[in-house]
Image (cartoon, rainbow, N blue to C red; front, side):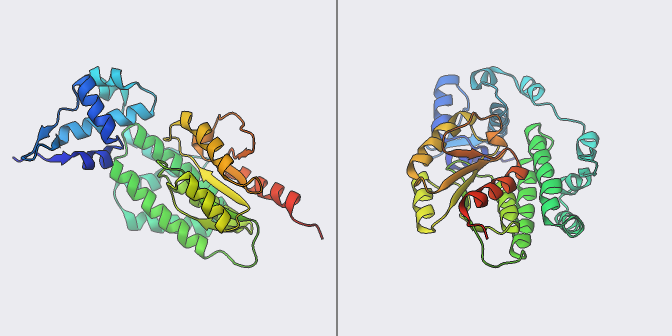
Length: 304
């Protein structure tokens, strides 16, 4: 049987580990141990790629790479125990059984998931749907990915289907004259977009004009875009997977790039517990996006 092997670019995309890290680990720890093709390029067997994925997941949970490299496959598995599927997938959240939605993703039933989510949207209304369904469901999917009970492709399926639904729902919200103008994006290496979409939907529902730029925008480009669009606010989202130690420096740098007339708001699970930073508004949750909007209007819009 032919063994699958991947080049270094494919491994970088698949694991989230950079080429430089892979080469450094090879020199320092003797793992991974790539083979070579006829041109001398590295080729990584599938078993090594799977181990690298697990190592990356454990690093995101706070484990040190040196310890992980020395661990056997059995020891790595013990560090990332799988929860019993029946309990994990069927748990209740906030009094409503969202477990069935997770089961639909786990069963790869895209049509069933979309139908169930559309029914919830119609029943709850947009704001409650975002706060009481999408937000806790996103958190649970992240936890399921971290402990190994969700595969990477299942997390991607959830993300893509939920993105599609949120964008359709946002497009259907009423228009009109809107203020303030809010530019939404994320910094380089932050690929998660659901937090931005949830915030965008709530802002639009509250009458703001949103300028979505997607994810992974260079800081200088964020500054240029904010000026070009005459934005009042730049809103960023950080997921829990983003390296928290890098966030304060990135925010301070962006604050220096942006004109002081443009406010900088930051939310997402990645900023929970972050110390206050001068000139930056930290949003502790989706509720705080609405209160932040009310505060901005009280300070910046003329009263009748």
